Amino acid sequence: MHVMNVNVNAPAELIRKFHNDLCDDGNIIMISSAMSVYPHATSVPYTVSKSALNGLTLALVKEYCNRNIRVNAVLPGFIETPWQKSKPEDQRKRICDKIALNRFAEPEEIAQVVMSIIDSSYINGALIPVDGSYCYR
Image: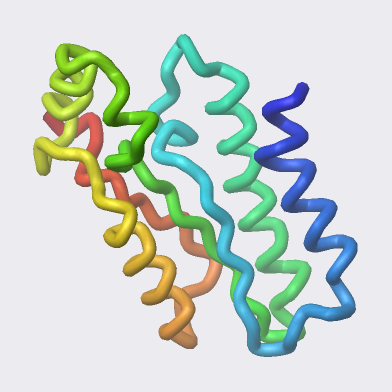
């Protein structure tokens, strides 16, 4: 239940709490996960929570369309973070072997996608994978 609270209930509650303070013509950008599309048996709660976040994203499009507030989600794959760098090399290799680009994303690459959503006035209701084509190898 803790994972659902963090990944779904907290964003939903924040949006509910600040509903009246959101700027018309603004953006809500959720950070979901590629694991919401490519589940792993060892992380069922995480997969379910991020899938629910995707559903929340799409439901909020209908909630905010009259105010021109765009709602999207970015679905990052594996990112080159200290946590990922601490994994054993053989585990990292198994992951990279599943990614068409054969590497983890840099944090800046995820930020670029978020900025593209902010800069565009027409991206809405999108679940945007940024995973180097995970599971395509």
